[in-house]
Amino acid sequence: MTTSRVLYLFGTAAPPVHHVATAVQRAQARGWDVCLGVTPTAARWIATQTPDLEQLTRHPVRSDYRAPGAADVWPKADVIAVAPATMNSINSWALGITQNWVVGVVAEAIGKRIPLVAMPCVNQAYAAHPQFDRSLATLREAGVRVLYGPGGFVPNPPGQGRPEMYPWHLVLEAVEQAFPG
Image 1 (spheres, rainbow, N blue to C red):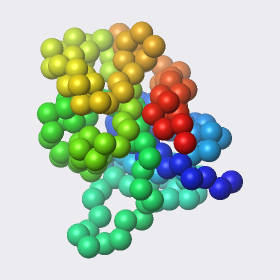
Image 2 (cartoon, rainbow, N blue to C red; image 1 turned 90 degrees about the horizontal axis):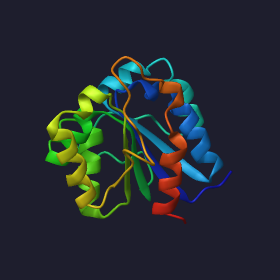
Image 3 (cartoon, one colour; image 1 turned 60 degrees about the vertical axis):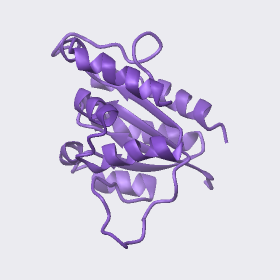
């Protein structure tokens, strides 16, 4: 299939990242060329899946910065979705703390005006931390479409998550709205 719309799908170290192939396949069925990026911890979690994911996307799975002067191996993004997004990644992004490549790319994407979608994956204990709501508000003020609460991700009690039920379809619907192509 020939596609012209490019989606950067960035996953962080939350359990649904183990099911990211589902999101990739669904996005491709919608006509997206998907480039998959993950945080360093998520990269370790999905290491055994990486060859299959690279075959599925036809792009390398990235988790680190390229060397200065090296050619970029991905096409330019039309939309970037961060899902699942941990509390750490949400807070780092909102505060501009770019300790890893994924957060660095999305922090810069705000200034580049690339459409951004984020759907957290946190439990109720993490969600109760006061910085989390402030970070979500900061990202929304910066123009990020945050899918959290009614119509988005709803936190569960600690230890009671169902990663296989993560609502990837909501992320992909928001991506379509951000760049209908």
